[in-house]
Image 1: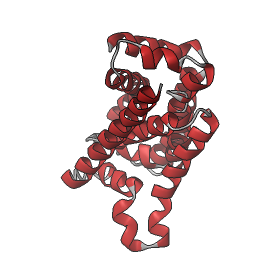
Image 2: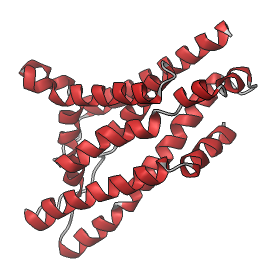
Image 3: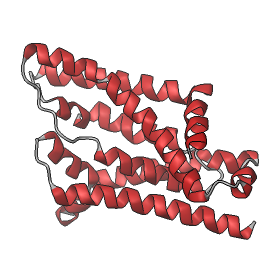
Length: 221
């Protein structure tokens, strides 16, 4: 599996995708930092992840990161190598997931320079804020596994994020199904075990579904 992780991780930087992801996210985070901290004096580091620029960029660039996971392999014909490889499909899927996760974690580590700035002015709050991103990555991979078109994969992922965001606007009873609202609790320092379990369960479910889709494709081949 380590070979898959290294291959996928390097591939993000052999193409502009990795650089675009990190650059665009940091630009959005910088804008959020300016309005949240400089404009409103908020020293809650977590809240910056919830501001509009950051949320919008996450909704659009995480699909950019994941849409190529399997769709590109299928389009270029290299999927055959995966399906006939001695490495199990489970290891391939987990390797791709971990590689994408590394890119996200590296990007988030870059944002900690702002955490250092906040420490100079006060005592910023910092708790678990990143669990929802794992679910977004896993869903993006699932979307990529069911189509050979990267654009369609990206649109499916973006559509899913937007729907989970606006659900409460249509019906207040659907608020408990909105991942964005769950994430907002973390920014307020509320560690909800139920929401954490939901995020983790969703991520695991998407990974298992991706493995199932690829296993079926392998059996057909």
